[in-house]
Image 1: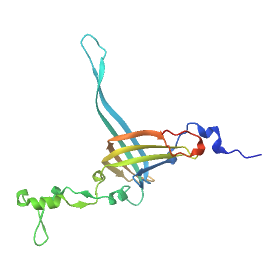
Image 2: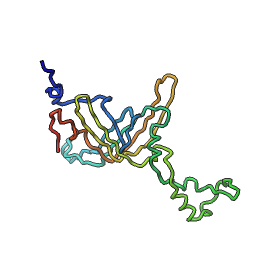
Image 3: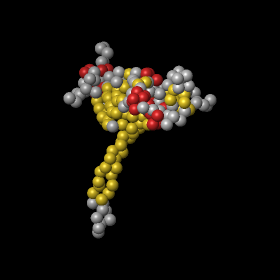
Image 4: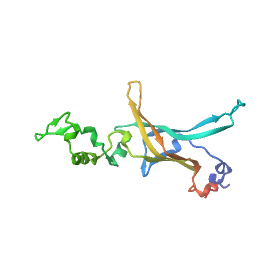
Length: 208
């Protein structure tokens, strides 16, 4: 008796679902191996429009839309975004230390008036490039989330223009693992969709 090919089973040609173990997230070519959880929400301002003589709204006006969410990382022996910070340069805001002037002996002179620092020196400090020190200094990035289960079904979704707002991490003797949490805002996103490059053996027709 021939063994049936499970890939041809009608169970593999129906809708499928994915667990957290089936998900991989990436920033460009960089896979975020430490990412434990990602959430997002889309909100938009909508207000009712009323007129005299009717307690019910006549219509709804539509305003601004906001996309926000959170990233939760599992921390190993380094910061979760360390590799991402080391892969880019940002222009430091040099005016943060413009009140400091280095003397001929190399010591810092504090509270030097701004007018004593020339425009050329301010320009030189402003164009100083270095690695991001805080997560909120990382330039905007896109996150692509890829889904693949054992049946060969795949899906994908993307969040565009992510800007990290804040970060936090805590350690405790009661915690067996350490986590880092970041909240973000974004400019846009694509809904979860079936991947057009899915294995043809599943028999599912992919959208063009």
